[in-house]
Image (tube, rainbow, N blue to C red; front, side, top):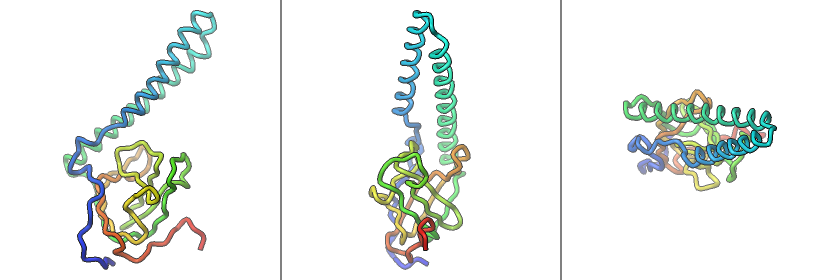
Length: 184
């Protein structure tokens, strides 16, 4: 139930700017730099006559890097195409559940912010490298337990999550959603 007559504020919008949907080239550069370092170490190992270990590591690293980059580039292209053709999904309403994220990057899901609206679940964290919305509440994120939201999103089947493309929020417009991860 929406209790605020104020208009929702758009806090994130890739729908209006599909050209902004880009892979994180900085991460590609770091991982690619690691591949070049491994290639140099492999060359050095060949010159010293002990090439097996570093050769295997370099091949695995470069193969894994190429595979991951290919998936990311494919996902970015798919996202741009879905935005340009209007094939993304939309939901709006008061939050059904909300768990605030942690203000630090983590590989663990317990640091992610989790919430649901209209039966769709959203999960993101500060440590994610993605074009989609991923700013958690403790770091100035716009979504709170009592927010009304309008979300345009696309499904990312590779990471099994919904990527937020546009987010509009009305603050303090709804009853506080329960934290489903906290014990009662």
